[in-house]
Length: 237
Ligand SMILES: C[S@@+](CC[C@H](N)C(=O)[O-])C[C@H]1O[C@@H](n2cnc3c(N)ncnc32)[C@H](O)[C@@H]1O
Image 1 (cartoon, rainbow, N blue to C red):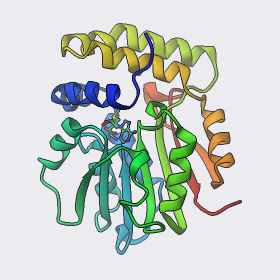
Image 2 (image 1 turned 90 degrees about the vertical axis):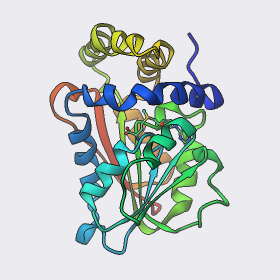
Image 3 (image 1 turned 60 degrees about the vertical axis):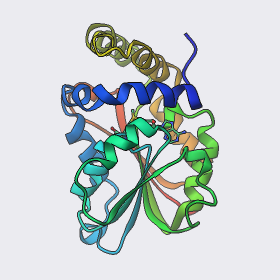
């Protein structure tokens, strides 16, 4: 299969939105890991006075993680899939949270340059046609001193972790996706991780894009060597 991109990917997420929250709730550590990555943004004072962008917010799992890490922040969630975003917007949020339906690539002109203190992207980047263009855009949206945290399936490079990912997909993720009627989306998930950057390659991509103080941080449990948090600062190094 070819990977899903752009409109085809949004259509698959529209379709997958009905079962999404149920499937991720069954994935051990899903919400706790997002919260861990959100805390790694290191927003001071519970996010008071900070503006945070949740790029690819989906049904709001990452938005909720950001809110837990920075309860006083103003958070804008952006997603290309109307189906995913509708489910996010239908949840209860404080008035400081809002949602925008747009592809990440179309945000220039819709959001003020330099207006965000932090950008978070949970499970977004391996889905993008042009991740470098998106990183450039993110840097443009960050205020001086602003920070990026990317939470992503990025294999360590060890054949062991690649085998573990394939085994978890074959035994658990893809059968669950098929049962939910979303076989194509979960085939895409498996392939997109295999074909995307390893963790060291994504860190190098961030540095090339101009992010400084880039760090790659592990996540616990079955995600070890499979999912990482990447943090970096928007200034040029
Ligand atoms: C795997 S979900 C993750 C959702 C959420 N961040 C979470 O952690 O649960 C990926 C989300 O990225 C969105 N997405 C994919 N490509 C996008 C793009 N180019 N611009 C904006 N959102 C996109 C999808 O619609 C989907 O909701």
